[in-house]
Length: 169
Image (cartoon, one colour):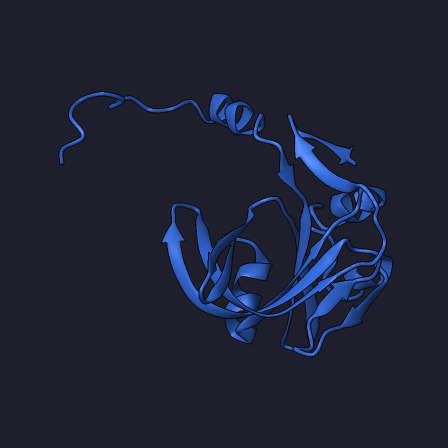
């Protein structure tokens, strides 16, 4: 199959950002522990991949310190955020925040894998890194889900749409 000559021009990255911003996405904080520090980032690129085996993916910018940390540790946690955790999403998406003590602002417990999982999240997952695929300025990190937990609290979800956080009942 050939692609032909269509679309041979450059796509404007600002336009692209606005186009994909119209795809409403759930918000999660992805965590790991490496070299004696907890690492975390806000992600709206967490996606279920497979049920047999149970796999999910997260896309991580290769320049982010989380990228090297998750590859070093070989495991990560995902905390799906509730609408009342907007400030947490903002904090873990703030560039240049200090590494030591960054988890002090987010109540959490350590999962069986040793990664932090956020208290008050709608659900949590613990994953072992299974595959890493280079993809432009990001890596697609595929995790094998080893533990999944649902909150008993029926709170609204935090979603990201058009560059804004909002609640989804």
